[in-house]
Image 1: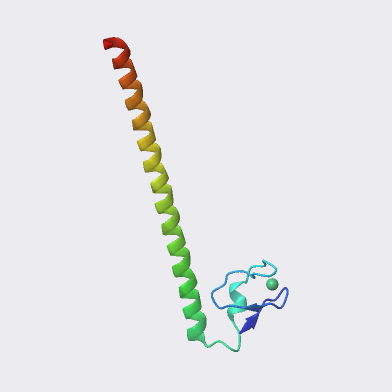
Image 2: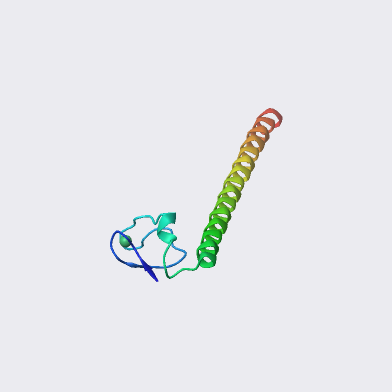
Length: 90
Ligand SMILES: [Zn+2]
């Protein structure tokens, strides 16, 4: 187990920043005697995977918002057309 360089709070392998003081861990901090190169590489890979997963989720979220906006626009346009037709024919 390694510790935060800023405050000494013990640090979890997958955390990107310290939960106590909020300072970000640099990649260089990963190089620790407790960790074999495989473990360091594995942690790095896991972090990359998490970042990619978060990016995909963000893109999906933006996509959902855009679809919702488009649906709202169609509903508004539909309502306006309906009202115009209603005013003309009723
Ligand atoms: Zn800290």
